Image (cartoon, rainbow, N blue to C red):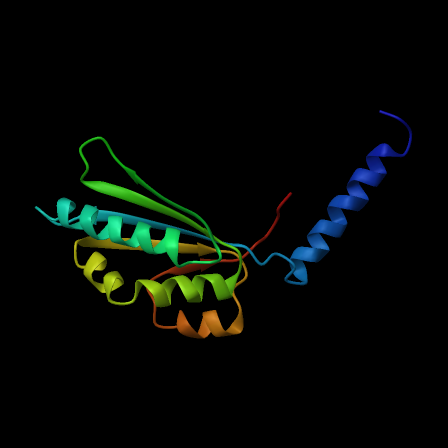
Length: 138
């Protein structure tokens, strides 16, 4: 390593960390874990297909929307990424009543990772979704 390269890297990393403190990271990630009620997995799959179609055709800021099942399909993970808080609010609006129907298929726990806007924080106030804000990132 040439002289001074390490300090430049450290300075760059410090700059990134200051950016986190200032709220520079706007992308949000969501993780939801479903444990299905007996006999509800097929209903979930039908509803999830409708959600996927909405995401593909209407959402403008959804960057990732993936669904993973365990081997016996008794549980799944939904992994989501949004450009920013506005994109997540838009997505929730597009899903509308489907969200309630999906939640009725099982027991759900969720986490939102990132720095949501004040508007999104207010909308999440009564939510079971846990918020995790950035500490360190590269």
